[in-house]
Image (cartoon, rainbow, N blue to C red; front, side):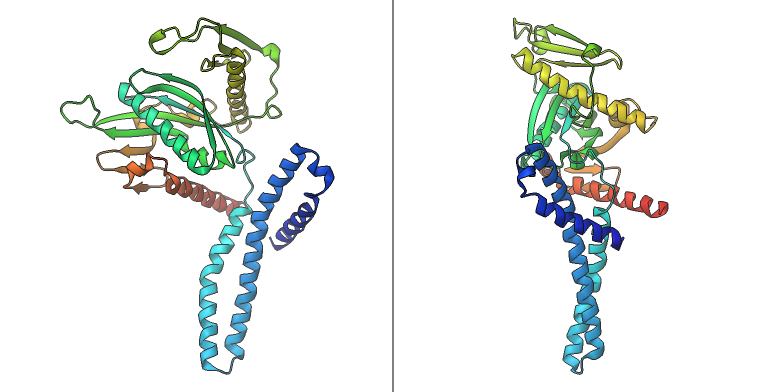
Length: 358
């Protein structure tokens, strides 16, 4: 591992020198790619140097406990040894995590899809709240979230919505939000105070770039139609809405939020690329979950990854057994504790599998 870290440090120093060269600065794509690589290596090098410094300080402190003639000096040295010995394993573990093979999708933007599942109107209302929760979380992260398509119910709920979230390492944090989210609460329409259980599904797809997915225009059927509002009300007399069908896969994407047909087509193509990339990755990994149910399930209440219980002010993530009693704050977009715990959990699982395979 030390050999690998020394090479990473050398590569980092070389890239640091290259960044300011006219050849790289003159090409924005190359510059952006180089900066991203520099940032990734920089995290590893910074932690590596921190670990090396702690190891050197620990060796010095241990030597001092043997060499010092003064009792007070020895006591101080032993205190330093204890302090470093407590911190060093944590730093070494953090370094191991940074050295784990990176998912190539971690740096990408995401296509977020939310759909109401079991529970009628209550499910559509909860879907709208979850969409707002992610919008607030994205804002707090400094990301940009744009709604691509939304089908509202006219009473404050949504049947489904598609959004794109752009920013730094969006997929690495949002990926574990995919699945069935279950809500338990008393609906506003409930007169006898009974708690109802509803569910929604969330899909998180890494946004595919044009270089990732090659789409043959001859494989596309593009239909245009008049966009409509809730209940089929006509909201546009021009053929601005777009439906794109990828005939080889059968994937269909409709978009009608924009008044411009061109803009609707651009948005539809972004979603189509993400869905086709997901299908391709599922084929490559030969998973049983080759369809979209691998992420979101059927929307049935029993297939939950997380439960939101409003009466108890509780949110529970069932994958890691984490429960927080601050649901109100959570729904305002303060979901960091759960997101970070999920990332840490799955990183630990990856470390275990790496150790077994070593």
